[in-house]
Amino acid sequence: MKKLLKILRYTFITLLAIIVIALGYFYYDFNYSSIKDDYEINETNLSYFKNSYDEARQNFREMSKEIRSNFPDAKLFNIQVDSKIDTGLTTDICFIPGDSTVNNLLIISSGTHGVEGYVGSAIQSFFMDKYLNEELLSKTSVLLIHSLNPYGFKYIRRVSENNVDLNRNSDIDKKLYLTKNEGYPKVYDLINPEGTVDCGSLGNQFFFVEAIAEIAKASMPVLRQAVLQGQYEFPKGLYFGGNDFEPQIKKLAPIIDSICKPYNSILAIDLHTGYGARGVLHLFPNPAEAPVKKRIETIFEGFQIDWGDQKDFYTITGDFVGYIGKINKEKEFIPMTFEYGTMNSQTTMGSLKSIHIMILENQGQQHGFESEEDKEKVKKDLLEMYYPSSNKWRSHIIEETKTVFDKSLLRFAEY
Image (tube, rainbow, N blue to C red; front, side, top):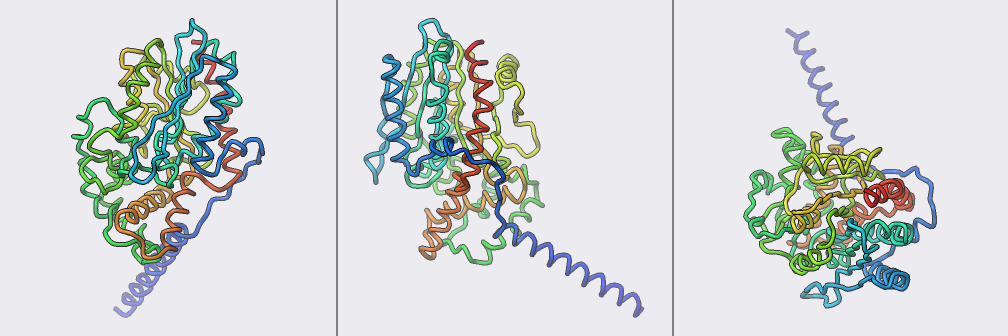
C-alpha cells in the first residue's frame, strides 16, 4: 500500500511539474515572445511606406496627379467621409481608362480595415510607380480606391467611427444586417469583457488559458468562425457589421457602377494585413463558380491560392470585394484578397494573440483604460499587428507583391 501511495505521489508531482512547465512556456510565448525577420532590406521598397494617413493620402494624390499628366483621360476625385470629430477624412479615387478597345478593368483597393491602410497605401504606391504604364493600359483600365476607411487609418483603428467593420458592412442589400451569427453569442463574454483595460491583470496575462478552454469545448476553427464571421446584433462588440451602410459604402455604389459599366471582365484586389504566416502574401479569393475559379487559377498560376477549404480558414459576410462583385453580377468578376501575414495567426497561439489584441482595443474604446500606459500599449500592439515596425518585413512584402504582380497582372490583362 505504501509503495502504491508513493507511486501516486510521484505521479502527481510529475504531472503537476508538467502542467507548471507548460503554463510557463505558454505564458512566456503569449506575453513576451517576438518574431525575428530574416529578410534583406531594399531601401527603395521602404520609400513607399508613409508614417500617417495624411502623408499617405498626400502621396496618393500627388502620384495620381502625375499619372494624369501622363494620361490626361485619368480622373481623380474623392468621397468625403462623414465624421463627428474630423471633417478632413476622404476616400480618394484614381481612375485611369485604358485604350478604347480594352474590355478589362483592374481594381485595387486599400484601407478597408483602416489601420491596414499603411500597407495597402504602400502597395498602391508601388503599383503606380512600377506597373501603371502604357503597356498595361493597352490591355486594361485601372481603378484605385485609396483608404476606404480613413477614420480607422488616421486614428489607428480597424473599424469605422461607428465601430463598424467595413469588411462586414459592404453590400447592396440591407438584408445583410439581418444575418445571424449563431456562434457569436456563445463566445460573447470571452471576446467582449466589461470594465476598463488593465493589460497587467491576471485575466489578460493568462487569457490563453480561458481561450484554450473554449477551444476544448469546440475547436479552434469553430471559435475562429464564431468570432471572425461578422455579427449584426451587438453594436459595441467585436466585428460588428453595422445596421446600415456606412457613408462611404453608400456613396461608392454609383461610382463603381458607372466606372465598371463598359467592362466585361473585372479583377478586384482588396489589400489586407494581419492574417496568416508572417511575411507571406496569401491569396484569398471568394468562393467562385467553376469558370471563374479556373480563370483565377490561370491568372495566379504558380502561387498558392487559399480557397477556404482548409481546416483553419473562416468565412465572412459583407466583404468589400463581394460588394463590388454584386454591383457587377452580370459580368465576369474575379474576386481576390491579398493578405500579408504578420503574426503567424494561422497557428493557435498566433491566432489567440491576434484576437486578444483586438479584444483589448475594442474593450478600451468601449469602457476605457486603467492608465495611459495601458492605452499606449494596446495602440502599439494593434499597430504592430497590422503594420509591423520591422523594415525587413516591410521591404520583403514589396518583394512578395512584385513576384505576384510581375506574372499575374498581364495574365489578367492579356486574356
